[in-house]
Image (cartoon, rainbow, N blue to C red; front, side, top):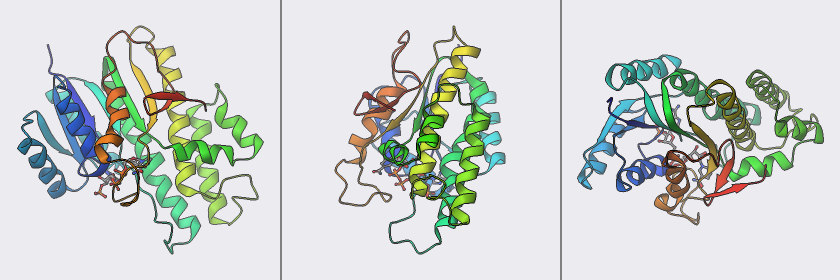
Amino acid sequence: MARRVAVITGANKGIGLAIVKGLCKAGYSGDVLLTARNEKLGLEAVEQVKAEGFKNVLYHRLDICDQGSCSELKKFLEKNYGGLDVLVNNAGIAFKVDATEPFGEQAEVTMRTNFWGTLWVCHALYPLLRPNARVVNVSSFVSKRSLDKCSPELQAKFRSTEISEEELCLLMGEFVAAAQSGEHEAQGWPNSAYGTTKIGVTVLSRIQARVLNETRPSDGIILNACCPGWVRTDMAGPKALKSPEEGAETPVYLALLPEGVKEPHGQIVWDKTVQEW
Ligand code: NDP
């Protein structure tokens, strides 16, 4: 039988690194691929995990904003494992609250990583998902807060159980265009670039779970979005409430849901609890 493998994106630090360690501590019975866009930082992180006694951790480069990099990883997985068992889409960015870049630029840059980058990883790697695979898309509670600030029309679209990936992509593009022309609030969008990109990640997860139900109904693949909570990392700063290890708990729980479970699936989960969308 082919060796099992888990892929974590943006895992050189923060919550991603804690997810790698969390999977190892839980005794993940396969290789854990710690991916990062910066090779030096990725290799250093692998050494750190190995120094804690976990030998089944390997580095592979992945810049989620580079489709060539996504397909390199796909080829590596195909050649060495013949499939994929766990995917945690963790990589993400956020501008600081005091950032001076114009809002339109912040929207475009944040969307490129958090939404488009995540989507490109999914497009490259989903064909490799083996039966009983687990996919975790790291979104945020900010996605729900931002959804509640959208116009009723946008809220209805984002809560629809029929919205397609193409429609979602168009909406994410419309947000960036509106942000660049300064009209996003007039058009019913929230005033948060990060929050809107994470609406994209949560809705994408709902769509992907639905598509899996339709296309691979007997394969037992479970896919969810999650929020790690407010976590002390470079992104959120030292005042946040949770340690990276605590932030990793929900993503690790979802990544290791045992074979045969049917739920949660297509949900947004935090503190290991399904949240209303
Ligand atoms: P960090 O800033 O500590 O880590 C982000 C990670 O993502 C880094 O490894 C970074 O790599 C990587 N990354 C960014 N862009 C890319 C890219 N193009 N390709 C590959 N990797 C990339 O943030 P956190 O650990 O806090 O965040 C992890 C996830 O959790 C994010 O999706 C975030 O939105 C989400 N989240 C975090 C919360 C918090 O309170 N911290 C709350 C809710 C959600 P590099 O070091 O090279 O920049």
